[in-house]
Amino acid sequence: MIEETGQELSKRSRVPLWQRRWARLAIIWGIWTFIGLVFTLQFYFASYRSERPMPFVDAVYMQMIWAYLFALATPLVLWTVTRMPLERDNWIRNALLHIPISIVLGVLLTALGRVLIWLRWGWLYDKPLTFESVVRFVIANFTEAIGIYMLIALTGYAFSYYRRFREGQVRTLQLEAQLSQAQLQALKMQLHPHFLFNTLHSISALLNKDAEAARKMITRLGDFLRLTLENSGSQEVTLRQEMEFLSCYLEIERIRFQDRLVTHLDVAQQTLDARVPNLILQPIVENAIRHGIAPRSTQGLIEIEAKQRNGRLRIQIRDNGPGLSAHRTSENVFKKGLGLANTETRLEQLYGPAHSFNLSNNPNGGLIVTLEIPFHTNGVAPSQSEIA
Image (cartoon, rainbow, N blue to C red; front, side, top):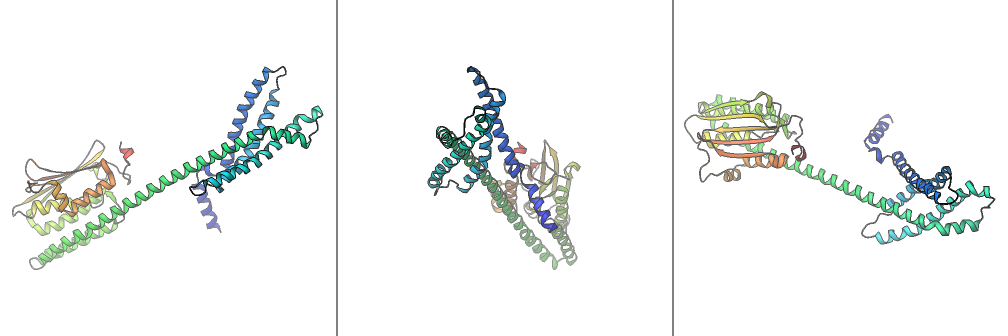
């Protein structure tokens, strides 16, 4: 019982203030009080044109009667609006139903108003309250009540449609976010079997040549998979965690290539807490090793640099391989490589136009991959409006 009460209190605390019943009633009465005061001032100053100006207290009573009568009727009108929505298949019927309802409510409010006016002034002038006098007053004034009813109903429909429109927008944004998250998760999951297949292939090649090296590679592969599983549900990790993943991968590749692979890291200290996409660097480095190191028999160099610049995180991966030749353009590399293609797609999904991902030839020889994303450390990728 206590748990259920706590859940109810939690749900109530999440409801916006203006959607609570007492708050709505307070808003309705506040609006009608303001309207009543406006008409009171207008009625009071207009009475000065006559020979006997009306006292201010009488002007307040006269106008606030009608204001508060319609304040009492407003929740009923709004309830009627919710019960009779104007949809494509029923709007004519429901719109016509408002006519008799407005007439009945208008007659009742006008008759009640006549009684309240008599209670204030009728007995002073010895004027009896008769059914005939009430009927004459209602006939002369009830159309105004119908007009106010229609205005309240139209306001209710307008607010209802606006709220449904906003709720539809929120649902659309939520669905888009869920779809984007699912797409990112699918892209990231493609990298695991891709990397695992390549590594197992290397281990298989080493088993007959160097069993000890194959054992070390299996050990480092286990460390890499452990780190990967620890963050399997995260689209973003800190650059420090990403560099730890990358170190495991590079150790595996050093065992494979021995002295042919040299790495140099230049990661600024202030960038280590920056958030980057999970497993974003490994496929880039793998591409550099495959095309810059594997085909050559001499020593190859891979340099990784990370710096913060103008509110952005800039990461460069450079190798001293052949670079991009005429037949191996940047576009072809993206199309042929699963790792780089997924990298570009993930960056587009996470950051949109706020990111850049470029491949270019190094003037000193080799390929430079430059990655720039918004610098943030709070675990949530900034929205486009925040970036702007």
